[in-house]
Image (tube, rainbow, N blue to C red; front, side):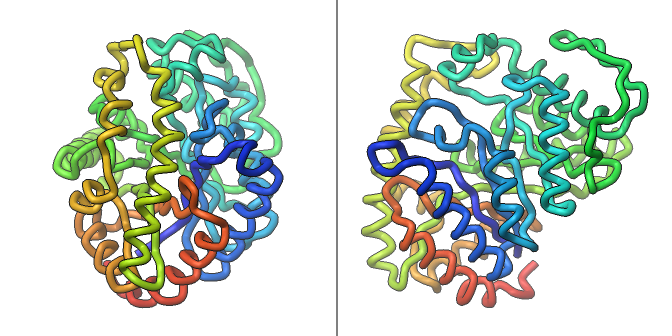
Length: 354
């Protein structure tokens, strides 16, 4: 089983400056690298204290790249709708070079109305901008005399971007998918990999969408096998009782930041994001007990965490799990302890598991 770190910062200036958070994030990543974690993943968000300390995952992962040697560096995800494809292709290629070929390039649509408003981009264009942006980036990595005549961007003919990526013909491409069959289908048609978050959909629904993705890949001449990243909140402590108590406290702090960001959906509806206007109320009602009952969070001492990870592995065979250890009010010391417990005591128990 492969396990990595997932960072969606839920912190703001009143708690600590960005420089301190980044120092601690890099220290966590260094420890994970030494303890044979598989990857470090960063998401792109802006302005809100829910994710806002990660507006530029490529820059942050570039810093991690120079302090690690084994972990994959995953943009999970960057948003083509907010960045010109030439700029995005070039910056990702720099990261692939700085990491000596350890980039997994993940892309997503974004979903917060406040972010689309800030960039002056219509939410109704988000899917088309994702598809155009990813396909343009892929071509910029490998095509000569490349001309792009898209709906949102026109450029060329151009040579491939410099520097060229280390991984040829290009780094692995992942698409963040939630509940939309269109996203799973398009990613499959292009032969891309997937990143999912089970908390936003039932395991049964995701199982059906993953089957759709697999069948579509095969129908379009791609291998039915693909890489899958699955993200979870995780709190591991020395004992089950401590883990339960502390996870409740920290998740409450996380939820406060989440609700503030989700509040940008008030008064907004979108055919492209059906049901998202109800996310704030759904998040308000969600408890750690609910998440545990659905195997949508990992909370416990070493035995309990190990057992939960084994159940998740059966739900998503072969998946790489991205664990968010630093959420809400979780301190750096607690997150470091969790990395050590997972790396020194949980991962050895999982060696040999499928």
